[in-house]
Image (cartoon, rainbow, N blue to C red; front, side, top):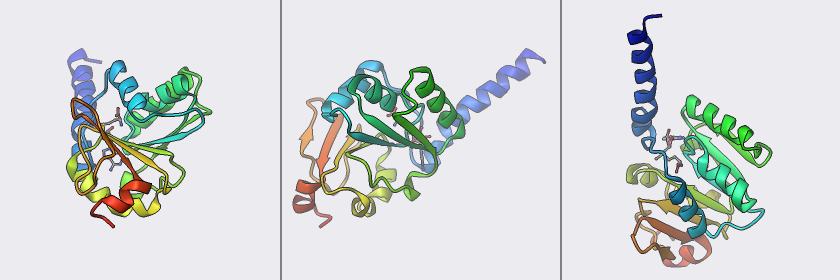
Length: 179
Ligand SMILES: C[S@@+](CC[C@H](N)C(=O)[O-])C[C@H]1O[C@@H](n2cnc3c(N)ncnc32)[C@H](O)[C@@H]1O
């Protein structure tokens, strides 16, 4: 096969992985390992807890949560290529029993088992998710959002650089404007 054609196909696939999800919720933006640990520490993930990543990309946050924090992970992702990558990564890192990757749409997903919901989406996607999703969540759930706050909810904790926001539903239900 002509190399130019091959590279063009690879470029189109990669561009599609990054650009197309913008229209469904959020673009793809892989995180640095240090940022992943910062997010998980900020979320105060404990052994045995279930963390649910809505729009999990290649699943590195969930794999790290399983590997380093002994948590369980559930990821939902719309892009089949990233679903495949996330499943392969979980298998490669020997955490495929702890990490479940589902191909689907975050707006139709029910994260009722989550102890922690992790979000790295856009404001537009979060405006679509909230407040409807609150009805499906455990009253004790912790919601952690990276880079985008949840408009209309008061965070329990904000990182010093204002890139991480933690919401606790049991407290949030009383204090945020969604009640
Ligand atoms: C900014 S990335 C975050 C990836 C991962 N959560 C992380 O923090 O590394 C957003 C991801 O959401 C996915 N996504 C966008 N819209 C979606 C939707 N409606 N349903 C499921 N996944 C979606 C994108 O394909 C992309 O992988």
